[in-house]
Amino acid sequence: MSSPGVLRRWRPFLTGHLPVLPFVVFALFPFYHMVVTSLKSDAELYNPLKVPLWIEEGPTLAHYGLLAQETLFPRWYLNTLAVSGLTTALSVAIGLLAAYALARLRFRGVIAFGVAIFITYLVPPTLLFLPLAIVVNQLGLSDSLWSLVVTYPTFLVPFNSWLLMGYLRTIPKELEECAMIDGCNRVQALLRIILPVAMPGIICALLFSFTFSWGEFLYSLVFISSAERRTLAVGVVSDLIRGDVFYWGSLMAGAVLASLPIVVVYVLFMDYYVKGLTAGSVKG
Image (tube, rainbow, N blue to C red; front, side, top):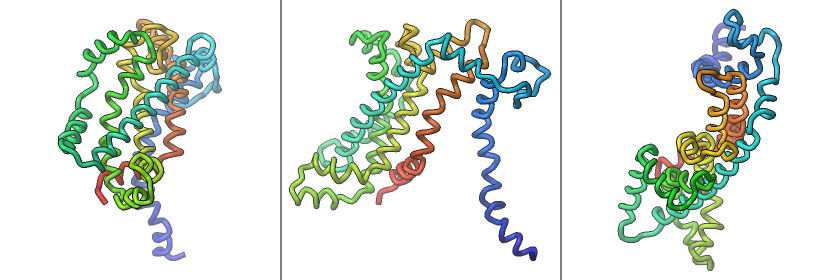
């Protein structure tokens, strides 16, 4: 085969895949290290003569067994799933209604409301810690999962509103106008016409909200004190780090199991996620 033919055959790999390969390796290395560490025995894990990035003495599931039998990991998993599901549904629903009102309705102060939502999104969550703690105490939700369901939307609703507002502006107004001419009111037009068309943007907001709620640490650490009500991020760290003793094998096993739902969700909906982010950045 001629040299130009070989070059033409390998050009897509050399110009497309090869430059991206270092970034892929860099992104996947932490997950690989977590998996390898979680499958090593303690004897190999704490032996400085062993290769840290490879299993030499055979894999073991002892660290996963410790999580299931000697900790409240299953309960933490269910707590995190419940909080993430409720928070995601609530924040996306509120954000969608706010975004629709700001993108479609015309009323006094609509521009100011849009700017206020964007500014609220820029406020660091740590600055809202004290006022939210006061609200949680006054509502009697301390040491309850409902304290997280109440506080997480304060960060998620502004972002979802801002994201969906940009996406809804790319949808032609004629779609809902035709539906309203045919007899639909505004709510019916939103649910039957706009909602299916805006599904990529909604899925993008769902993924962001679920990811944030699943991995949030600070508020869960402060608002929840009972061991059985903790979420994964707090439970694994607080139970497997005792003073200066780190149970690295079990910590990595917990990290692997905690990351699996996020990995699965993003693999299934990555196309919608990218489409929702890019379409909401411009107005069609």
